Length: 188
Ligand code: ADP
Ligand code: MG
Image 1 (tube, rainbow, N blue to C red):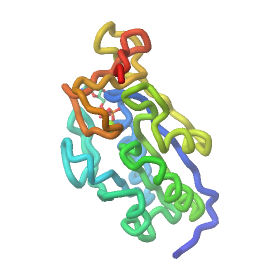
Image 2 (spheres, rainbow, N blue to C red; image 1 turned 180 degrees about the horizontal axis):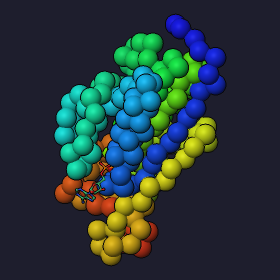
Image 3 (cartoon, rainbow, N blue to C red; image 1 turned 120 degrees about the vertical axis):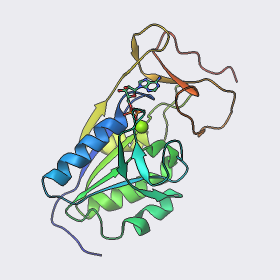
């Protein structure tokens, strides 16, 4: 594996659904490319909401991306990407705690790693891998959405269908952004 003398940098962009995380990630990756850097996007293959091989915003903006079935596949898929360049990972919560190891490996090879995702699960509890990544981050951007009930500052993703699964893929109609007051955690 090629190595770089760059120290590595971790940027975390988090917040509830519809907060603009993917929009911000695409903006950072596009800016890096415009500056002549290699910038690779990666997403969980599980997220098939709008596209299979692209990170996509709710408003239809998209950037081609590698799709990893699990965190263990990330380094193989990336190859030498990120050595002296940028790696953007969207919907990181779909990968769970296992994503921490490849992120650390990328940082050690000198990559600028930008991780976007939801840091609170549908119960409002910390959502892995964010607890660990937020500690390691050099920069944290916490975005808010608009509460679907009252228009206030939303920090939660309210699940609108019954499921005990921690990871359940859904988009508009399946989840609502909610503020602390309007959020109704599931009873069970
Ligand atoms: P995130 O990645 O945080 O889920 P995106 O970057 O994909 O968010 O999209 C954010 C944009 O989605 C907002 O700027 C807004 O235009 C749009 N949006 C906000 N609320 C909704 C909603 N309930 N349904 C669909 N689109 C929404
Ligand atoms: Mg998104």
